[in-house]
Length: 444
Image 1: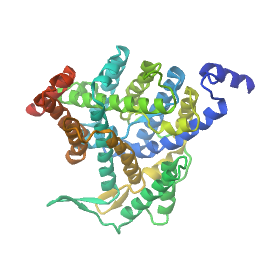
Image 2: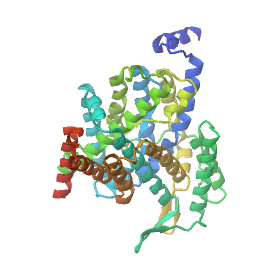
Image 3: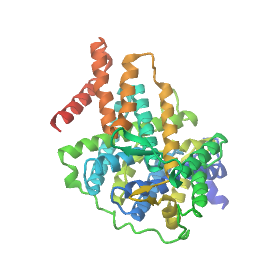
Image 4: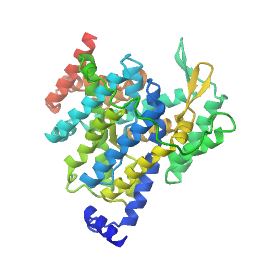
């Protein structure tokens, strides 16, 4: 045992990073519990697109474990990876349900986006692209996705219903889904305020247990063999993904993953003291895992994989090396044997012809709140910065599309700068992106 610990010490350079095996193990467990909600949420989201619930769960665990292992063993950072929140809703509600694109083709688009990200990382273009997008637009994208997720949480939790006259209206707050969604939001909020480790995961379990007597969830066991991956394995349609319209979707997948991962790396890098002289060491190694895991995830049958901001909880517990990520990866793999529990928590509750998700809806609302914190970093007194960011923020939920919300911001941003005599402040690549967005809407 001592010899194994010594090997870990040497491989992960624990002493150099002022850490030890026990601390890294604890940090990995904490990171897993704060990120594990994706195991429950992802199958619920992608199954709405017609994908097999169990297969998506298995794909999610495998893709997450794969990404965490690459991050831990190759980049040596305590950063977890899993299918990203926000982009999974774009996959389901905008691409598949909104545009009527089969999920097999959507998976093909995810695969292509992963390949593009790998190439961009190899040729160091990701660093360039990250640098040319203004921080306030990046913050607007993150906040907009957060509000979009919250809106979907409101709908899935029964707080908001569609209405022919006003588009939306307040739901029946006396209904079981609405009441339990409120219970979940308050429970998780209190746990977060009290800084309880795994607050989101614990909140979901609490609501699940409370919902059993009311029939919101049906207990069908805890442990079983891993769900069959066959319904989604290698089902991606690459031929269909090369369609001109789908290639635009590939671009959105690339951009969202690009900004999401960049923001997470910067945030947790500063928290853990990894950033030196304004730069993150081994940055290209840190950027590669999400690209490779996204490609592998599409093969398995899940949406884009990104770095998780919840990694900050493990870093707060003292995690400083890739051993933390390796522990998290092992726990994602072990979760494969708890499929009945996942189905119980992630399954829906049918009322009439509508299916609600009172167990996972609170998670969407909470995660949306966490992402909306980026609004404080926008200079609201500077119109040429605030307005494009604002259009992104409100555009995503009001158009029910991440891509359309981004388009509003990326088209208006260079135009405002141009007519304010600040054309040179905008990188030529931004003008190109704006032109591509205009071309997309002019031919659609």
